Picture 1 (cartoon, rainbow, N blue to C red):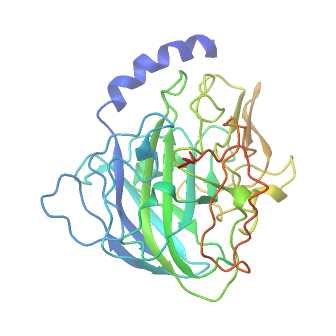
Picture 2: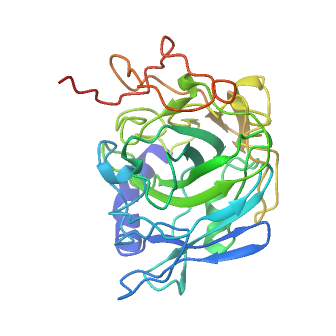
Length: 335
């Protein structure tokens, strides 16, 4: 019965979602509110949020706008944060911020990338992103954390406690899967926020934990192509690299029997960043079905991406060009 119902779901959801999309309107850092801009404003006000030109999703994993959103423009400000800072990211629907976020199926993920120089002038085309948080299904096995945004609750994320100081982009991403039963149906909503991280920590990712966008995902990989998303039992795999190991509770350390993408939480709250954690998690969706959530990335590329060196302190971030993961697929041109 579930399989037959799934065949009719695209027809049911298309009228609801075709004109209902959204964007990031506001970011709060440790209680300090940074306003963004609504869409289609004649003169945008200064902000830390890179403004997109439409609320429509990015389609296709090779789309250049997968980086920071549809035609995202440099922002003129940076937000001040520190290791351990709490961020609340308000996703809204429509174009003027008066509607709530409309979608409720699919993961919430957060990445960071270090800017070369000030983030106000940094071209993120070749940014090297590392994942700091991923949230999928709540402990009830049927509700996605994304659904919390429907009631205007913000997406919450914590800056890693040991992150080295510097200028960083935070990439907040929602993947809506309501049409992802067919190839190319997934809808990507990335948004980039410009930050300056203080403190004196020394943590950072290894090169094998980084990826580029586009390049980090494949249209056909599990977690993006989800033909059984409405047909339990469902196995869901988070796309992209795992949560970086230096992040508290990084995904590499959890046991197969650990609980889900974070501990159980009320519908308006979230588990701590990085505690998503388990490679495999099992939930009871109904007496006769289970939902399994995996954060183990699947291979998404042929060949390996060789990164060029970046002027960073080797004691801060370890770079090992001999151990590149297959999910890093940057195109290297030879001259």
